[in-house]
Image 1 (cartoon, rainbow, N blue to C red):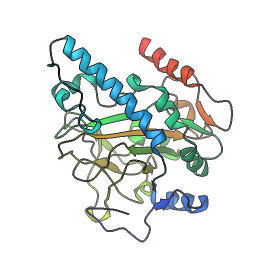
Image 2 (cartoon, rainbow, N blue to C red):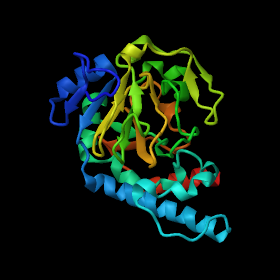
Image 3 (cartoon, rainbow, N blue to C red):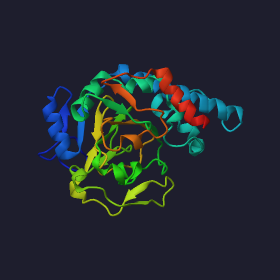
Image 4 (cartoon, one colour):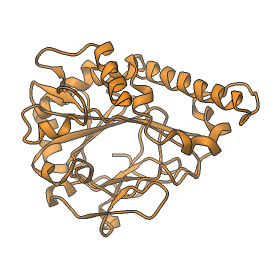
Length: 294
């Protein structure tokens, strides 16, 4: 485990994508997370970056038409939002509906990812409605997420479920530019009370702080994948660099999980990714358009 703050433990859950599935299941059950180095190739990530660049271009064009932004050449991916920074609160922090593109649909269905998810969840895997494309700008409070468990957002009734968040960096991430920190094994401590933070993001945050000696800092490269249990404690650090920390996080569960019916979040049916009839990208995109229209 690469960590700028804490040495790896004897129970490190950094495993090769070629690790046998029983080892993956054992590590995830014990530690509540997995890091799979180099799981996703650029054939999966490049279309996602292209979708982002297209949307950033749309934002830029809108601001230019409104006279809010001077005409300027487009910047490289890691810098593309910097000239727009003062306007970004207007466009939110997750970009879910705006970027429900074919590239994002296909990333959920990447065979390398689904093979691991099937090992952890079973032969049938559903994708959750809520994915987030996260542009963490330099010094931006809005996207600095405090310590929390994802179950706090799903509801206390999901404490008995396994809902896996899959966090994928689109640029190299470190403590300097706002990578994640986690507390291995914290998922075994059950659901913890949360409060709404007083900061700009109004995120939910754990009551209390974890022991710093238990914290791991998750420095990662594009293609690496971090999988986290819904009860795992985690947070993101501030971005102190001069570039954008781009990442995407996806969520998955088994249709047999006890709270499956409450995890639709407006979808007309479970979004089955494998193990039965699947949904085309065009139909899936239509679900988001329907949510926007309602």
